[in-house]
Length: 302
Image 1: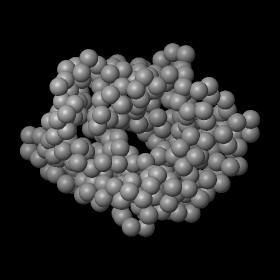
Image 2: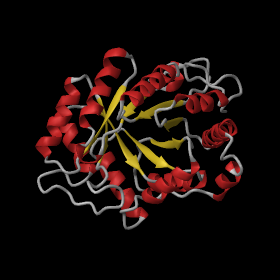
Image 3: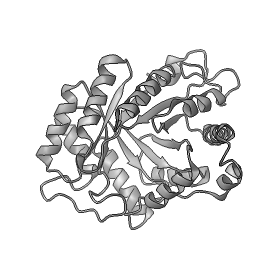
Image 4: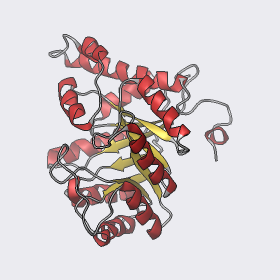
């Protein structure tokens, strides 16, 4: 069924998905569930829950996923990685998620066990990369599998063609869509998408949209994962360090403007990195003119 079938009046519907991370404390758990309650009203196509390097957060991820499935109607995807584990261990983790009701996965190689920036070494008895992990999951069942994509290249890839070749292998092995690393230059994304299509990759490539809670922290994170921070962001946030309300308003404007521009370029699906906080996400979606069912109101996001 196409989006047009679901919305015969011809209104444009933006597909949205949200990413959460498992809480590390009681306070963070309360914040997460308040966020989920607030964002559920936007009827996302799915939500996902992240999974730590080397499976370090399997237990809290599983707990969060179980509760999402038991207490909400949100289609829920569990992140799963293959770092530091044998194929049998990864399969066991997958089976635990499946027993909890998971039918969607976000399959990632995962960060090296030494953290972002450390050298990656495949486990001798494990999956060498995310393409092999996708194939392994497909051997278990016909799951909906999302994978990662990198408009500015994965920091460990020798070049962009090698990066896109890995994406093609993931797609050929059964991935349903790719969710991108965050970026802020839409021209970079458009050029990347053109190269992806030229390489024969036909699955949807969904832009990952980072909502800027703290620009200084984001710069540090971006330097580790190979994402660039354009100078215009410094200009937009200049002088707002001690003005949280104004900073939040600018952050919402920046994200909404980026999405609006991508919509004009023909993109209709977006994956939002929520950082487990609802206010900024809701502010962006309201600024886009979305109704709580995800439909754009007349003239909005067109």
